[in-house]
Each structure stands twice: as C-alpha cells, then as structure tokens.
Image 1 (cartoon, rainbow, N blue to C red):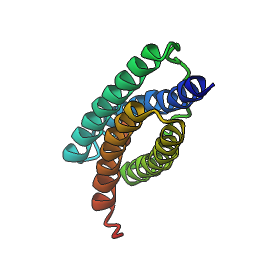
Image 2: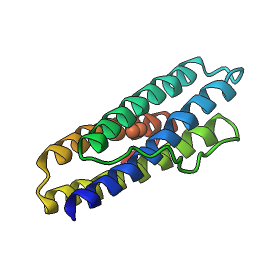
Image 3: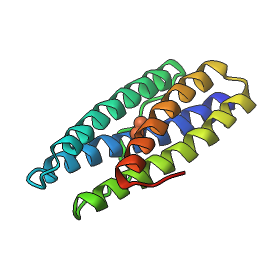
Length: 140
Ligand SMILES: [Fe+2]
Ligand SMILES: [Fe+2]
C-alpha cells in the first residue's frame, strides 16, 4: 500500500534528522575552544533546522496514520573542526540524495503534499551543504 511505503520512507528520514540534531549539537559543544566561534554557532543553528525537519516529518507520519520513529541513525563524531565540517558535509550530501529519492517516490505514488514538504526540506539541506562547502573552500 502506497501510504505505508511513504510512512516507511519518512521514518527513515526522521531517524536521519534525529541523528543530525545530535551530531550538530555534539559538534557545537566539542568544537568549543577551537577558536571557531562563527562555525560553532552555525552547528547550533543547523541543529535547530534539523529539529524543525524532524517535527514536520513526524507530523506528516502521524497524519498518514503511522507512528514517528524514535530510532536514531549513526552519529558521526570526533576529530578536529575540519573533520567535523567534512562529516557534516557528508551527512548533508547523503540527506540530499535520500530526499531526492523520496521526492521521486512521492511523485510516483501521487502524494503531492508530501512531495512538496520534502522539496522544502531538501532546499534547506542544500543550503547546509553549501555552507560547509564554502567554509572548506570546495567549488562545484
Ligand atoms: Fe534536515
Ligand atoms: Fe541539514
């Protein structure tokens, strides 16, 4: 049933968002003292964005008749500030790939409301990835 497939996809997204919240907050705390006040603040801001994503996704799962998961995906932690930023960029790129797949799934199953919701989240993830690429000096 298509509704169950969408709930399953959104719950995978929720697990990843929950991990992203904790990953960014952990980096926010652990990067303190590395003389990177601006980046430390960006970690916290990104964590709050991911919390909003988790909330939007969870509300949609509930609306579709499912139960939002409390299972957490793997959190990347440790290392110096550059490693933290690289880990976050990797996570954002994984999220971008998965949201594109789930947007296609919703389009295929004819759920335009969930598709539009995921497109808005995708645009936030692209902004996050762009921030880390800019700091790392990576040109596309
Ligand atoms: Fe997110
Ligand atoms: Fe993000």
